[in-house]
Amino acid sequence: MFYLTQDGARVRSKQIRSLQNPSFKKFLRLLTSQGIRKYGLALISGPKQVKEVLRDFPERCEGVLLREDHELPELSFQHNIWTYCFSSSLFDKIDAYGTRQPILCVKVGPLPAWNSRRHVQGCTLFIPFQEPGNVGAAIRSGAAFGVSGIVILKEAAHPYHPKSTRAAGSTLFRVKLLKGPSINDLYRSGIALVQLSPKGKNINRYRFPSSFGLLPGLEGPGHPAGLKGVPAVRIPMEPGVESLNAAMATGIALYLWRTRLRK
Image (spheres, rainbow, N blue to C red):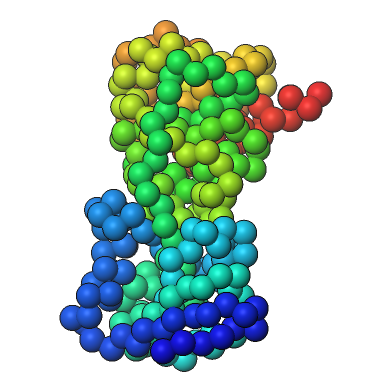
C-alpha cells in the first residue's frame, strides 16, 4: 500500500497483525543491544525526538512504526520511507515507554574506532556507564556543551539502546560517537585524562588543559587502580550528601569547563 504525504513523499505501508510476523519480531529485538548490533537499526521514541530526527536527519530514517489508530499526516516526511502499522496489542509490546506515539526506526551501524594518536583540541568525553539512560544523558550533555568527541568505552551500555535514545534524542546524530577501549586500558592511550571522582580536587579550583579527556567513573566501582596517578576533580556538595548521579555529575563538569572557555 502507498500514501502520498503533504510534502510529496511516497510512503510505503505494511500492516502487521501477527506475533509471528518477521517485521514485528525484528522490531521487538531492537529493544536489546544484541538486536541493535544484528540489524544495525535502533528505535527513537517520543514525539519531539521523532519529529526532530525526521526533519534533520532524513537519511538516517528507515521507517516509522504506527499504531492502528495513529494518523499518518501528523508526521512530516522529507523522503520516501516505510511505515509499519501495528495492531494496538503488538505496538504496545514495542512501545517500551508507553508513549502511545509513533516510533522511529533509524539506521545506526557500528561506531568508528577512536584513534588515541590523533590530537584533538578541547574536551573528549569518555563514557563508561553501564546504565543506558546514563549513557544517553551524558551524550546529551556532551552535545550541549560542545565536546570535540564522545568515546563509548568497552564497559558502556550500547548508545542506541532504547533507554539511551530516549535520554539523548536527536543529539545522538549531532556529535561524533566513537568506539573506545576498556577503561582499564585508557592509561596506555597517552591522552591527558582528567578523572571525575568524589576524592578529587575541587573542580572550582582546577584549570583544565587545552586538550584533554574527561573520564567519569563506572557507577559503583569508580575508576580502576591503573588510573591512580591521573588528575581527578570532584563536584563540591553539601555535607552529608553522598554522591551525584553519574550522568548529572558529568553534565555539571562539562558545564564548568565550557563556561571557563568563554571567560
